Structure formats: C-alpha cells, structure tokens
Image (tube, rainbow, N blue to C red; front, side, top):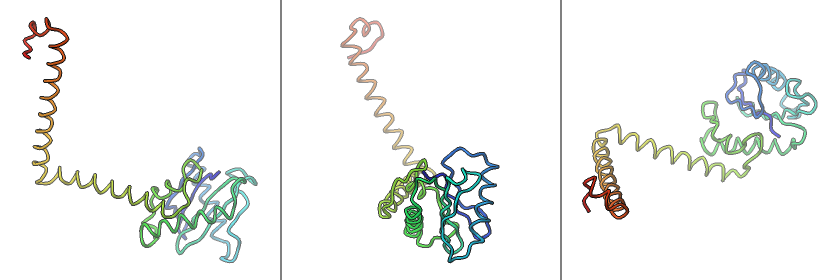
Length: 198
C-alpha cells in the first residue's frame, strides 16, 4: 500500500503532500524534512530505493523516489509494493502531468491528476491516456460551469434570469394544474369547499 506521496523542490519546499494514513501535522513536517535530507544528499547514480523511514514504520517501509529537473517525486510505501512498479508509477504520473500541462513545472502540479492515479493508498490507473482523458473531461466540465457563471454575471445574465423565471412560471403553472386535476378527481367535496375549478 502507498502510505504517502510527497513532491518537493530542490530546496525541500513541499509542492504536494498526500498522506493515505492518519498522521498529525507535526509528524508530517518532520517526515518531509527527514525524507528530503535522505534523498537530496544521494548522488544521481545511487539507487532510487531507500529502506524505511523511522517515523512511518521502520524496515517495513520503503522510500522510492525520482528526481526530475527541480522536483523530487517521493512515494512512501509498505513492503508489499514492488519498488520497480512504483518507479514506473512515478514515471506514469510525471508523463501524465507533462501531457496535461505541456511542461511539468512546480506551479502546474495539481491534486486532481494524483487522485486519478491513486486513491486511498491504492493504485487506480496506470494508463496515461486514461488519466489524461479523465483530466480533460474534468477540465471541460469546469469550463462549462465557469461559462454558466459568466453568463449569469454578465449583461446576458438578465436574459438568462428572464428565461429561468419563465421556465419556473411554466413549471409552477403545470404543477398547479396537475395538482388541481388530481385533487378534484380524488376528492370531489374538497373541490367544492376549496374553490378549485376543473
């Protein structure tokens, strides 16, 4: 199981931190510092796997990372995960970011892409095309909802409000007629006493 995903820059400043187990904020910050100090001092030719973090379970925990340009992508996993599989997952995540944003840089990182790949510490998707497609769909929906908000806030908003009011009046009138017909047919005496006409 994936315990956490940490992305930080060359200076140790976190860009994304996602923990899939309950950890208090103080421990999270200490863990970030511990992992940053471990991976930042390693030469580029060293292996990308580290044995355990004392704060997350000792020898049962693996720290797997990749360093791209100015960012470290770190996955903290338990011993049941394959180190090579996680390295491949990091590559999938980075390629997905690159396709969605054209250039992977610190400001472009979003949790949405990560949530398409991992949820609750379990891998959901490894197909880059599926990840990019899901992101694109979410972006389209966001743009559509933004366009509707723009219409209601612009000069065209009065037209949209009038259309909405006309629609509401039509629905209200239809409901009143349906209710009146139903009540009149069901309760003839109710109709006479309340003044409903059929």
